[in-house]
Image (cartoon, rainbow, N blue to C red; front, side, top):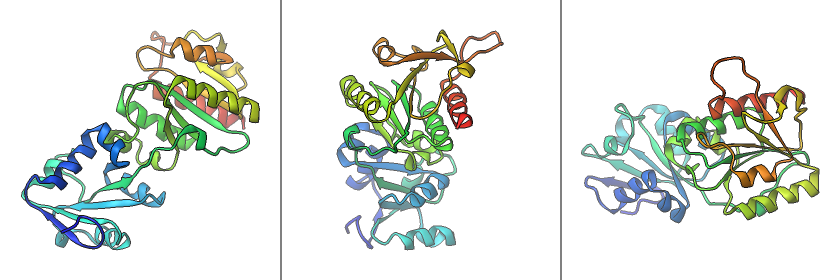
Length: 273
């Protein structure tokens, strides 16, 4: 039977459908080829639904044993393929020892920076070479909380469609656009266009930044650049910044976790508004 539409596909072995699902979960290239993402965790599933994502498959171990909420979810998405994974395959596919009763896949096409529409006074967050999936998810979660219009990922780093990023963002990735810049040149041209169109200010962040956060007067329109967890901002990105800002600290350590730093900076911008 087809895995699409209203039909139920029952999987009892590691067949081609199971391998596709496994690849969507673990393989960045396959997610890109199929333009789909694998979503685990009820809160992330709820956020995908509320954001209006096109749900392509709904996965479960035993339809008859689903809760009323889960059966209602299946019923609301009649165009999605229904896949029942038996013989322990559902648990094998799940990350958790006690998996949620549903997992889904959603359509996730890539959109180039040139096609992104932004408000007149945008708030953009650029994350340079993120290396930790939990940190990226937390940054996206904070970006959504503080009204960021666009998150741009620069350089080789974690995939925003990785299931662990989605889960750590609590599904915020479905509400706040997250775009991977294809090259430094594309990002540079994008920021330059925003400078001309809206007077955008590009602010870099670093523990040695010359301007303390509370004195920087950060407000829209603005692009804030946060650096890689271990290496900070690249030199090429620092050259794009109009100024460098630091977060004053009184403790013995000289830097914050990147997600904490991003949250503090975004709060500062929001409070100024």
